[in-house]
Amino acid sequence: AEKSTENREMRWRSNSGGRRPRNVWLRHQNRFLNSGFDGGQQPADRILNMSDHHERSRMLRLFPESDETIYGCAAALRARTTSCVELLDRCLACVDEWETSVHAWVSIDREAARQTAHERDRELAEGRDRGPLHGIPLGIKDIFNVAGHVTAAGSKAWSAHEPKTDDCPVVARLRAAGVIILGKTVTTQFACFDPPVTRNPWNTSHTPGGSSSGSAAAVATGMCLGAIGSQ
Image (cartoon, rainbow, N blue to C red; front, side):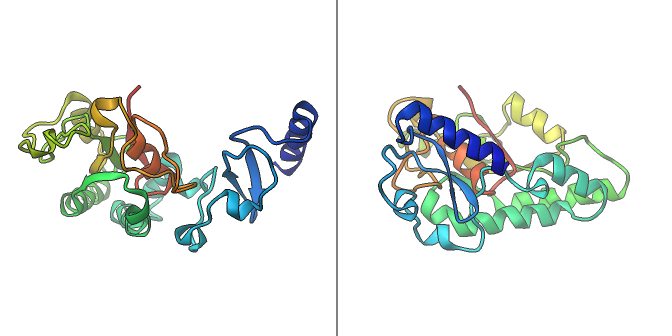
């Protein structure tokens, strides 16, 4: 990885006259971070806007550890080295750490998620394995109906609607596959128009883009192991 990065840096410099192109990966504090910087003249910590949450013990990584991926967590569940409740608790700890600065979620139902996690643990103990997504905490973009949640689609007017009584087909299939629905993630209004309140966790003065803004930020910070988006 080190050699590959050095070679890439040499190619960048030879192709750009010594200037870094926009949105390059640079090495800082032994981690790869997306700078989005054009010029290469400022200190890396200033480029990356290293605010308080970046200085916490859990730093963002471009590539997660194996036990932070769906594949790795699924293997750990079947090896009985972790539980669905422990996976959920880990995600909720990240929510507590990041959400106040990132704003990735419209709503989170901790009680329902915890109840589902206990159910999924009981199923595994009884030998019922629903498949590779069994016990995996996911976020659902707020244009998809989730029973018990309002579907506002990023609209203030729609946020006053009643909670949905049924899941949309993709959410129903995910539940059947054993996932833990953690909540609804922020979307741009009606999945288009201007960026929402969600901030880019790599640099909170920036937007993560859209329209699946909350889903992207929630996964990047470990607040869930995966999330539904759309394009």
